[in-house]
Image 1 (cartoon, rainbow, N blue to C red):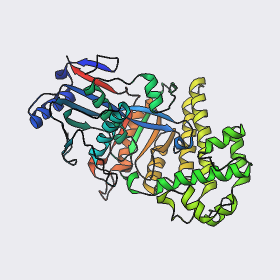
Image 2: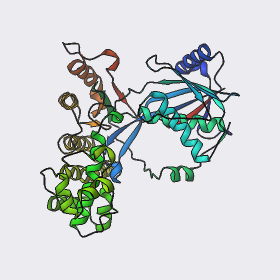
Image 3: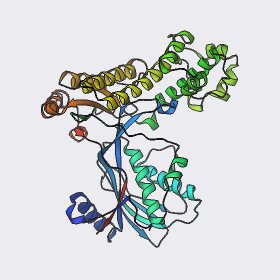
Image 4: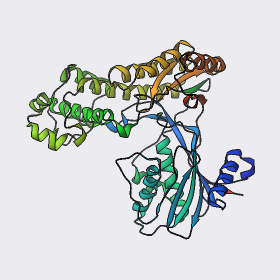
Length: 425
């Protein structure tokens, strides 16, 4: 194991009920005691939806809900994974022959992705075996990054077992991100409400189509402005090449693209290419049979949402008296754009967002990929108890009993801590 670092913390397991319960379950499962524990938080995207893969900043917040893994390195070369949730079956494989079935989004594949990512990063061939028991309290398929938390947790488990560290420089190189702290308002809390509609991104083409629509919009905008369009992949590249503001990009979008959907033939005419070139050189395998592309709507959402993220950050920095109201208005605008321009909402989410606004939220919007999952609302702190009770009654206590109690997640959250390794003191 690596020498203790700022990401390691010694704890009295007996004083932490969840850790103690996990330790006992681990002992019952494997007949031994965990060597260490790793946790990684879920996250909620407060604003900035479907713009990260277009090159723009988003505003996520780590939440208190997390994935927690109890770990024991073993001298065999067997990786044994178990889950405290009986819905997720045990899994066992050779640590030196990791195979990931990409056709099936099984829970253990996310762990294997984290392990394999570290293995490939360091160019390692021989990995030690380990016993792992996973526990999570992030609602699955809800847009709160439960799968990402499991991947991160598995990566940190692997690093710890191998006695390796990722330096900050390596992390930046590994995933070229830049983070800036944003001070959130103290007089308000963020409330997460699960619509109880699950959307599995791996099982749908909707997400893939949106990504391609953004790419096609970028190419048509670049062509319209006489830029070298064939190497353009993201909408932010067009803005960068033109050197203009997001507001000006919205005006360019109005001029260059029409609201009516484009068919493949029209896209080919605009770009001066053949249908065969479009299919083989631009479209991905899972979008080659799509018949219509809404380029205007997707570009309008991306540029306006990117501008809202910057406005949100600016308001947080300046902290005016009506700060919560202004932030709420931006969140409301974001949801309308996701619903109408990006079309990634669903009737249940729209209903939940409306209920939250009517019952005291200054702003409410879908969060995560959409098509189900959660809404996030900004609520004045003094209204929180009544808000939670009223939303629970209005949305979850339906007379038809259609919402399963285990999916009824409604909770206030505050910024949570990052990934950690716990050692028993």
